[in-house]
Length: 79
Image (cartoon, rainbow, N blue to C red):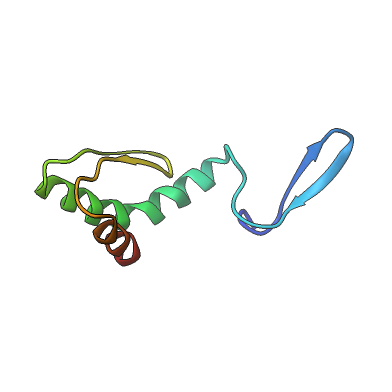
């Protein structure tokens, strides 16, 4: 229900959100944390090996990368 049945008002119209969870919903935050948990663990371990930075706020990620773009694309595909 949280992911599929979201509605919001804009102006004087009501719209149905067709993808994703509602911004600001406490359950959406929980789902984001569950989804990001495994992904974050793998990525943070990789960043720690090379002394680079990794940070996350909800589902936004900040990280540094000093290796090739090809290696970054492979890492992101893997995680």
